[in-house]
Image 1: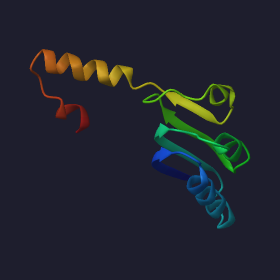
Image 2: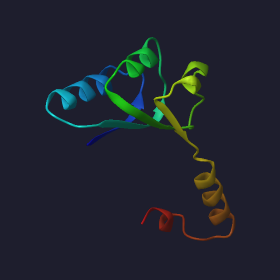
Image 3: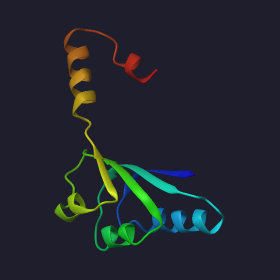
Image 4: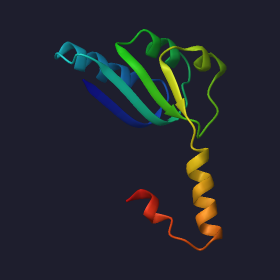
Length: 100
């Protein structure tokens, strides 16, 4: 099994090519993850037709409406993390402890 990690998926060309290469080299299952799902142009179509089983994204930017309907897109909310960061700053506590 393989997991592809990217910061931004815009046209999805790179992540889909990487997923295909991994499958061609024998990966059983391929998953993707990204922080910012721009998903411009035909990106969603590329992802839906790719060998990736799922692409896990965050809600740091609004998803295009069609992405919400895709069985391959899984959205994770950053709200709890941002809320905890705000709380820690307000209480003068360490933010860096969240990432260790």
